[in-house]
Image (cartoon, rainbow, N blue to C red; front, top):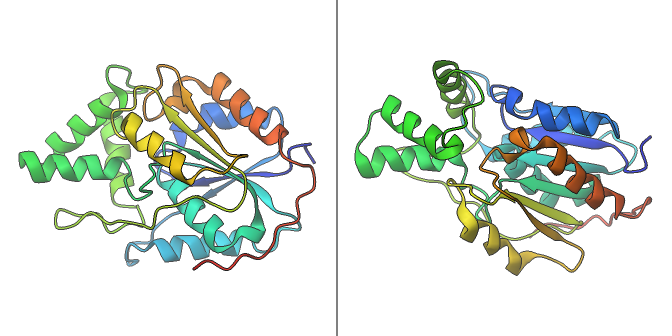
Length: 245
């Protein structure tokens, strides 16, 4: 086992897997990394509780707590899980997760449709420009298809009629919050709103020049920052079973 302990990457969707792979490949070099993905069945309603329970089923038989990491909606699932089942989580690292954890990129899409009365294609195209600016990781049509599928997969109740809200707050285990310096989806204020919830051992870090998917474009520096955070944790942590209220 690595000196860091096991890492579990919580993914909110298989459709954006390619955007996480550069960072995962860097982490693979240093430690064992497992990937858990939430996949919504066609007849399943959007529900955060369901996603959290699926992650619980995956982790409940682990012999020791894991270092849980997630980006965007995957990070949101990881955060809610860590609050409900802290005994399974040694540390928590969140990438591009707002202090209001339901504020994912999908909110920007629905705001485009609500405020500017845009159709699906126009709203998603504008949202992708907000996410990537002029640095698209692949062909535009292919990227649109991936994000359309991701839009249909999330365990949140976002829609044209309402934007879901989730409880704000931190987590009982050591917490690292990572964000992009020029993220047009969350913005600096969303990142700094975390400060009121951070404990003395927690870390807030911004990737210089990084956007919403900063870990795709800068995997080396992000991997190093995460490794430094994990290295700072005690080798053996006994988690108390903290009941969420």
